[in-house]
Length: 470
Image (cartoon, rainbow, N blue to C red):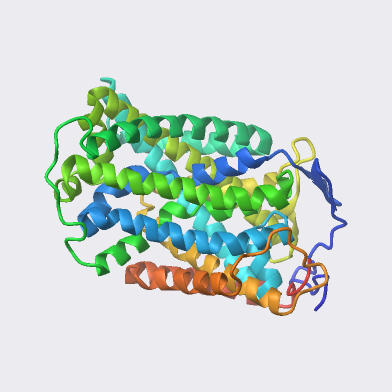
């Protein structure tokens, strides 16, 4: 295997073979440096902040309508699939602690074609998901104003979403440290709200406080809806692998990366399961389903009165803000990595000398995000984002197996997957299987995006070789 990438794109640019110097403070390259300002708490905040978004506030009512109280099992299945991928991703991230995450692992393990499809698809998937978060933020902002008696109508949803989307993009341009500080603050406050709400709800659900509720069948619609619901709610777990996209900016990546990925999945998985348990205990799955996307606000009102409803609305605001901010950060890093490998034009990977951030990549992320946010119709695109992420997760597991079977000399991860090869095989099978439970429309759109990215690679960068390179 070659240890250096090769080939040229149609503009005559080859992959950047950087003189990379990894220090405790920064990743130094020929064009600048990425400061290592993210610690374990920053990595956890990115993972948790990205995952605790629309899922925990929007999905409980919808999921309960599909699977009954067994929707909690659907969230648990999603967490298990995420953990099966988090372990292989952790090994690869400690072997290759660089910006790019899943794209970088797949391009080095399976080659430039698979890497280009995943890298470009990840860019689009994150753009669509971020737009979805921002529109969700707009709705929560309008609802928050309504809860305090200021009814402004839904006409302000998109303007508010656009304003905050632009603000998050500028914040990320000025430095990862600033974005991480905001992320840490948002996640800490959000977790505080959820802990209080879930503590009261759990005490009520087990009969220690409040009125007893009539028990209902755990899985009233059978086991198949539990699996289709798991495919639906898996979008709630998209954040953990994004931690790897900022590996080049993380302190002590050999320790912090696997801890951040696994830890964020466990924390969020427990929160999701408890949330669904509490929600279905408050109203029952049938009534909860009729409350739709705002079901959690009514659950909060049920346990804590108007203050509870206001707290949940505030939580929804914080959740969508943290998801959008973390996704913008991760999207720009994905573009940065693809551009450095000559799969996108070179200018996309320029680093801002003042702030040490990939400002062009941030612009390529922020611009399309704002355009999609302005449409206000991103729900289906969010489903496609889930499709494309599951594709990447499955291929991450395949890439690990490929690298282990023919290890390059540089392959020396600080963390190795326990239970190899069973864990990555199960991770790949589970990821691809969940795609099979999605709606046909989402599958077709996801395949179309893949075909488009494959076409771009064949047109622009088919001579670029990356397999086995570092």
